[in-house]
Image 1: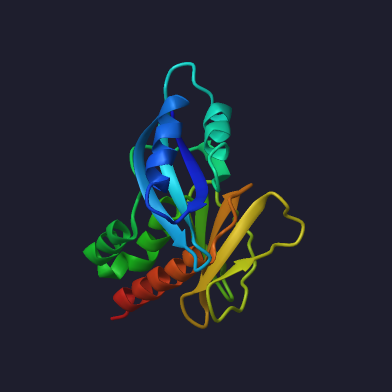
Image 2: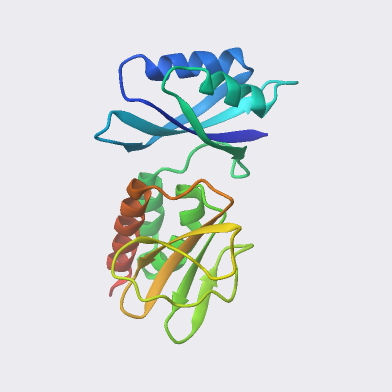
Amino acid sequence: MPYLLRVRLPDIPGSLGRLATAIGEAGGDIEAIEIVEKSHEGHAVDDVLLEMSPGAMPDSIVSACNGLDGVEVVWISRYAAGGNLFLDLEAVEDLTESPDEALTRLVDVLPHTFRADWAVRIHRAGGVVAGTESAPDDLPFVDIERPMRLEVEGDDDNLYAGARIDGNEIVVIGRRGGPEFLDSELARLGHLVSLAASIARP
C-alpha cells in the first residue's frame, strides 16, 4: 500500500538526499517526489509517495525523518490513489481533451492533483451540482473572490479549500484530518480553476 508523506525540510543542497537515505533505512521505497512549496525563510515542503517494505511501519519513517536536523514530518497517510502523483500538467491535459466537459473533469481531477479526498462544484442557487465519490452533498455556496481556506460550521474533521469559477459557482476540495492547505496549493487551485473556466467558455 502506498503512503503519502508531507515533509518540511531545509532548502539547501543535500537535504533531499539525506531525507531519501533516512526513508530507505527505515524501510520506505520512494516512488515519486513533488515540491509543494518553497519559502523565503529557507525551507521547502515536499510530498513523497512511498511504498513500505514488508514489516516496516509508518512510525519508523516519521521517526527517521524527524531525526534529521531541520526536518519535520507534517503528515503521513495511506495514499489510495496509488501509483504516482497526479501533476498539474497532467490535469491541464485532461481538461483540454474535451473543452465542453472541462468543468466536470475539473471536479474529477482535483482530488488527485491536490491529494484531497473529494471535490465538489457548488452553484449559488442550485447547491452541489457535481461531486466525486464520498463528497458531501449539502455544502453551502460561499461568496469568495480568491482561492482560500474555508470553514464549515460544525465540521472539525475536514479541511476545506475553495476557488471561484464565476459569480455563481465555486469549487471546493476537502481533506479528512489534514494536512492543511498551503498558500502555494491555494494559488495552484486558483490557476487551475480559472484555466478550466476559460477552456469551458464557448
